[in-house]
Image (cartoon, rainbow, N blue to C red; front, side):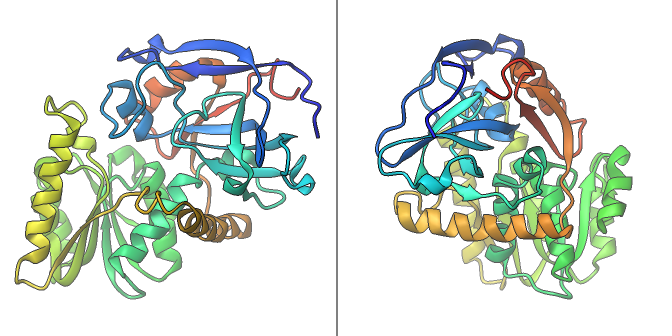
Length: 351
C-alpha cells in the first residue's frame, strides 16, 4: 500500500517547558518508510503521566526540546517500506514509541507492531497499550495470586483501573484509593474504595486488612511511600512504579530516582521478610528482540481480555489531536477516571 491521500501530516510539538496551552500544532510532509518500516495512520493516542512529566522537562531520558510527545498509539498501516510484509497493509496495530505518537502519522519498525483484535475500538484499545502491559507486569513482579489482598493507589487512573480489573480476574482482593467521586467506579470494578484524601487513609486500609496486605502498588513515592511499606505483611511486596507525588520537586530527576532506588533497596534487604521493588516499563529495552517479544506477549494477552469483555476500557475523555493542550490540561487536573485519548481531527482523520 503506497497511497496515503494527504501528503502532509499533523503533529503536536512540545517546544520547551510550557503550560499545556503552549503546545504547538505543526504540519510537515509524511516521511517515506525505510527498509522494514511502515507508516501508521494514527486512530488513537493517549495522554499519560509521562507526557505530563515531559512538559516540565522531568521525564528521565526524554529527548531535548523541541520534540513530539506521545507514548503509544493505535492505527492502521498506510504505507510499507521495502521488505515490510505486504500483509500488514490496511490492518490495525498498536505500537509503543515513548515519544512521537501525538501525530496523525508515525513512522515505526514493522517488528514493533502488535495486532489489535478485530472489532476492538481504537480508542478502547489505546487505553490498555502501555497501561495494560504495565498492570500485567506489575502483578507478575509482585507474584500475587488468587485469594491474596493488594492495595492499588490511584485505582481510578489508567494503570490503576486496569490493574484492579486484572487482579479481580485473577481472584485477588483489591483495596483501591481514589477521590470519593470515583468510588462508584471502583465499586463497579470490584475494588473496595478508600478516599485518598482521608487524613487517616493508611489507618483505613490497615483496618480492612489487619494482618497486612500482600502487595501495594504505589505510583506516588514521596512521603507516603513509607506508609505503603508498613502496610505490607511478611512475605509481601511493595512495588513502586512512579513518582507522581514528586512531580513538582525541585531536585533533579536523577536525584529523585537515586533517592527512591536507595530507599527501596534498603527496605528490600531488611531482615523482615518483606520485599520492595521498582518497576520500569523499559527494563531490558536494549535487548530489543527480547523486549519486543515480552511486550507483544503481554499486550496480546491484555487485548484478548479486552475483546472478551473481561476488561472494560476506561476512556476518560476524547479530544481531537489539534486540542492536545486541552487534553493534557484535563489529564493533569487529576479529576478524571481512566485515560484521556486523542483522536484524529475530523478533516484529516481518514486520508
